[in-house]
Amino acid sequence: MITLLQLGTELGRSFYPASGTTFRANPVTGVHISELADPTPYLEGGELLLTTGMSFADTAEASTEYLGRLAAHGITSLGLGLGPWLDEFPPGWRPAASGWASSWGWCPMRFPSSRFPAPTGG
Image (cartoon, rainbow, N blue to C red):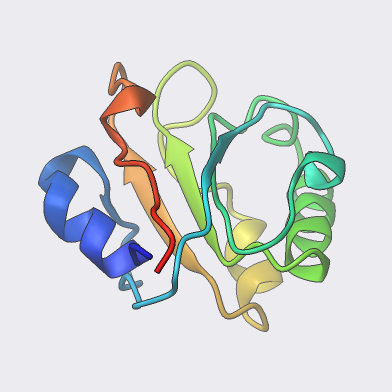
């Protein structure tokens, strides 16, 4: 199974760690794209979740609640697409993430998600 560290290495500047973080060797069970306020009913845990932040970028409270839902569901990696909604991680995320052992990554605007390799079992 591919890890987040391997994904970051393979994709280079197309998917890179957020400032102050590093990619870990967390196994990635899948890559899921969602703009839902609560994507957890569609996730099993272990996925890399890609989002632009559209559903939670407005307030620190919404960001904190969103991260709490992800953490409770076992999502360990988050890729934030830069572009129309956000150009950096929302201010409320860093305090909310302090107890969450997750990895944060950036995807530049117009990066096609099809470039993410498919995780394989093993």
